Image (cartoon, rainbow, N blue to C red; front, side, top):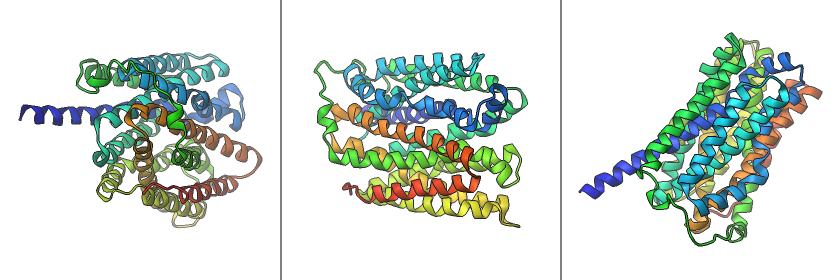
Length: 398
C-alpha cells in the first residue's frame, strides 16, 4: 500500500514538473509577440528584423539539440536540468537589461539554448516515468504548459509591457522561470522525480542508433511544418489583427492566445484518448486538417461585417483543438521507436526540426509582411500547413 501511494505521489509530482516547467518556457518564449511594435519603434528595425527575437531564441538549437539530447542521456536529468535553468535565467536577465538590439538578441540566444536543453530533459523525464499506455496523457499534461505560458505572456505580461515597457515584462517572465527552477530542485533534487536517473549513465550512448530511425526523420519533416505554422501565427497575429480586423492590441492578443490556451483541456484529452486507442498518426493527420481549414477561414472571417471578433474566436478555438491533437501524439512517437536509453538523442532530433520550424515560421511571415499584405501572410501559413498535412500522411506509426 505504501509503495502504491508513493507511486501515485511521484506520478502527480511528475505531472506538476512537466506542466509548470513547460509553462515557464512558454512565458519566456512568448513574452515578445504582443510587444513587437515596441521593438520596431525603439530600435528602428523592420518587421523582419524584429522577428529575430523569436527566430534567434530558437536558431542555435538547430545545431545544439542532438548534442543536448546525448548530454541528457549521459549526464542525467538533474545536471542537465540545472544547467538549462541557469542558461534561461542568465539569458532572461541579459534580455531585460539590454540597451541595444544586438544585446537583446544575445540574451534571447542564451535563453533559447537553455530552453531547448530543458525541453529535452523534461521529455526524458516523461519517457522514464511513464509507460507507453500512459505516456500520451503525460505528454498532454506537458503540452498544456505551453498554452498556459502563452496565455500569461499575452494576457498578463502584454498589458504590463504596453503600460510600462517590454523590459519589466521580460523581467517578470524571467522570475517565472526562476520559480520553475525551484520546483525542479524540490522534486528532482530531492529524488521525488527521476531519482533513478539523477546521476546519468556510466555507459557511452551512441546517438547514431537513434538517428537511423526512418520514422524519426518522417516525423521530423512533419514537425517542421507543424511548428512553423503554429509559431508564425502566434508571433504575428497579435500585430496583424489590429489593423486587419480593426481591434485593439489587447483584443488581438487575447484572440491569438486562444490558439494555444484551448490546448489546456484538450491536449491531455487527446493524449489520453490516443493511449486508449493505441494510435498516434490519425490524431496528427487530423490536427493538420483542422488547422488548415481554420487558417483558410481566418482572413475571410476577420473582415466579414457582423462576424468579426466572435467569428475569430470560434475559428481560432477550432484551430486550437487541432493543435491539441498534434502536440502529445507527435511527442509520443520518438520514445516509441527507440530504446529508453536513447530517448534523449531521439528527442534531440525531434527538437532540432521543431526548432527549425519555430524559427522558420515567424521569419517567413515577417518577410511576407514586409513585401506583401496581411492576406498574403495568412495564405502563406495555409500553404505551410498543407505541406505538413502531406508529410503527416507518410508516417508509419499507428
